Structure formats: structure tokens, C-alpha cells
Picture 1 (tube, rainbow, N blue to C red):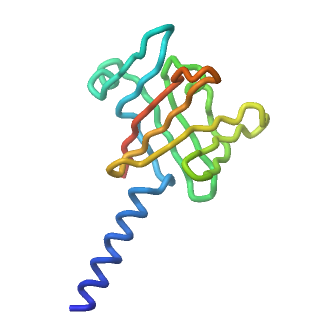
Picture 2: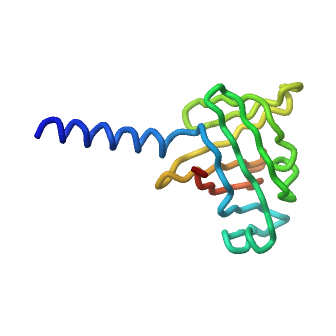
Picture 3: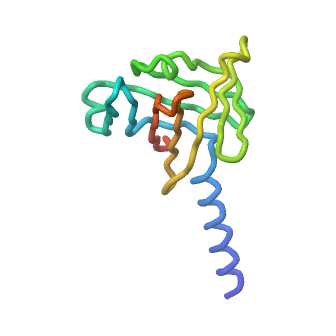
Length: 134
């Protein structure tokens, strides 16, 4: 009886760590961006039909890679480099120029990754939702 309980707890902990861990490959499923005075929302079916792509890869060794064809310059130009995490912020560090580091606020919800970046005036540059690719 005790072994079954212990095994169940171990399994739940392993699932929690996997579902609340950045390392892995993440695929865009929905995003918001502000253009002018309007907030634009792109849902999964629209992303697929318009062939929008944003894939984030966080590796255990502290490196990241992005691939995107979104029209948002910040996202399109991220490239690759190192990443670091502090509380609920992840910083994507540009390999050649520290002034090009980008910090996102992030959270996990039901195993999915949400990231948010606002400009200095509080306008949403991008608020994106990702699913982990197995």
C-alpha cells in the first residue's frame, strides 16, 4: 500500500516538473499583439491557415533557439543564444550584444507555456501561448 502511494507521488511530481519546466520544444498555438490602438488575436486555426510559425527551443545546457515568421520584429529577430530564468521571467540573451537581450514574463497553465512582452508604455508587443512538442 505504501509503495503504491509513494510511486503515485513520484509520478505526479515527475509530471509536474515536466509540465512546469522550460527545457523542451514549444510550438505557438495562439497569440495577441497590439497594433496601433487595437489588440489583435490570432487563434490556432488562423495561425495554421496563415502559416504563422514560432517555435522556441530551450535546452538544458542554457541555450535557446527560435524560428519564426511572425511580422513582429522582436520575435522574428530573436535567433539563438543563452537563456536564464529568474522567478517568472526568462531572459533570452543575444550572443554578441547585451543591449539586445529580451526579457519575457512567463507562466505555465495546464502544462502550456504563456509568455508576455510589453513595451515601456505597457503596450503588448506579444502575448503568446505554446504547447510542448514531444
